[in-house]
Structure formats: structure tokens, C-alpha cells
Image (tube, rainbow, N blue to C red):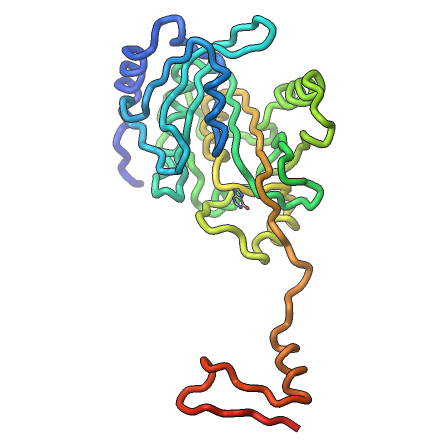
Length: 291
Ligand code: HPA
């Protein structure tokens, strides 16, 4: 079994306590801001920012636009004051972070006492019905890394209260998903603006080939992205209620078939003089004549 250094939970909690005023130290909701969602700080009252560099065990996010800070404060509508902590920037395996670093902030938020986690991300649309700009309330996930040996929860448990085997049949809280649709209705969202679907987690950083996109779609995924699932697993391990939202930022184009270069070449050769491309001519220029 690999040796892991003990995560510096106590030092991290101590550092946060020393930087955040007491009335903000017990957030109820944690929010992970995906790419482009850092603007949420504008909606947080009594905002206090804690840079990741001040919290032992946190890495720095290398993704452009990620602010690498925890944002403490209050959010709410119509006078409600919900204490929140938002992660402005997250860690992805494709940046070179190991899985324990990726999920570490969620474990810290759980230790701070949050009860609910809202994870957001930018994702590619696999389901052709999803227009760019649609928000997808995730109701399930398909995580190939999890079932092929890259599960973020592999390794020793990091708390005596955690269970070894975590059921994921209802990982995405039905009651929070219900709230999302009710809120969209109250906010007069266009009914097509909020959909629900299955998120496929891939490690990235490459986007999908046509064959991979087709495979994920055939396997039942509606959107695909490079984040969120590790955080959801850590949150479920810590007993948190989870909601996850994808903003569809691009359509993953899945062509029905392939353009056959072979057929094209054969058709060209069937009646024409075809000049061989330079790359195919090793030592001399040649004109191929057929028929
Ligand atoms: N594929 C994977 N991850 C993504 C995509 C995509 O098309 N768009 C945004 N994140």
C-alpha cells in the first residue's frame, strides 16, 4: 500500500480560524466554482477571502481565471442569510495534482461543518438536445476513472468516522435537485434553460475523439467534463448532501460516420491522373496514371 503523508487538517483549520471572523467560521453550504463562476463573490455579503496559499495542504490552481481563494460570507434571497464558503478555483488531476490533493478542500469544508455541497462546472454537451448555455442538474455520473483504478477515494481513510464502501445510488440529492427546479421556476427561467442529465467524468486534458464522444453518449452520458466527480465522492464520504450543476459550454460533435479517405482516393484513382502528395513520394516526383 502506498505511504501517504497525513493530511494537515488540524493546521489548515487553525489557519482558517485565524483569518476568518468568528461569525463566518461555521458555513452551512460549500460551493465549488467551476470555470467562469468565480463572479459569485459579487453575491456574497460580509465577504472574507482566504488565499489557498495561506491554508496548509491546499495547492494553487493553475487554471487561468481561478482565484485560488476560499470566500466566506452570507448568501441568500429575501433577507435569508445562509453562511457559505465558496471555493474560487478547484484542483484537477490534469494539472498534475494527485487525487488526495484534488479532494482535500472538500474534506476541509466538511470539517468546517458544511452540510451541503454545490459543485459547478463547465461541460461539453453529448446529448444533442442540450443547447450551449443550458444548465444541467446532474442526477448521476459515469466515471470511467473510478471503475478502472483511479477512484479518488482509493487509499487509507482520512477520518475514523468515514466508511470504506460508499453507496452512490443517490449521490446527487433528490431534494436539492428538486429545489433547483423550483428556484428556476421562481426566478422565471425559460423552461429549457435548466435540464437534468448524467455527467461523464474524464481526466482530460485532451477533449474527446469522435469515438470517445460516441462511446460516452452510447453509455448514457449527457454531458462530459474533467472535474466534480472527485469532489462529489469526497463529499458523500463525509456525509454531505450534494448538488452538481454543469453549464454546457460547447457541443461535443459526434459524427454519424467517418469520411472515407479510402473511398475518396479510390474514386479519384478510378478515372483521373492523380498527383501523389509530396509526403508520399520518397525520392522522386512521380505522376500516377490509372486506366
Ligand atoms: N469535454 C471535456 N471536458 C469539457 C468539455 C468537453 O467538451 N467542455 C468543457 N469541459
